[in-house]
Length: 66
Image (tube, rainbow, N blue to C red):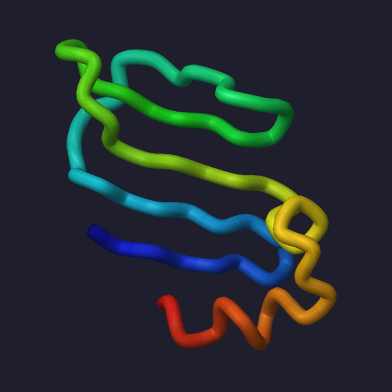
């Protein structure tokens, strides 16, 4: 598993397993899950993560992730 934070996009991305994305499922507004053809989770992206987590300094909190 790999976790990355992009401060410019304020996006947190989690890679569970690398693979070919078959479809993207919107779990909530700006929260997307990519799955393969077997329905296995590959990638999760949360856009606007600082707003969703209530962290005003998200860059500091997530700096050690990637």
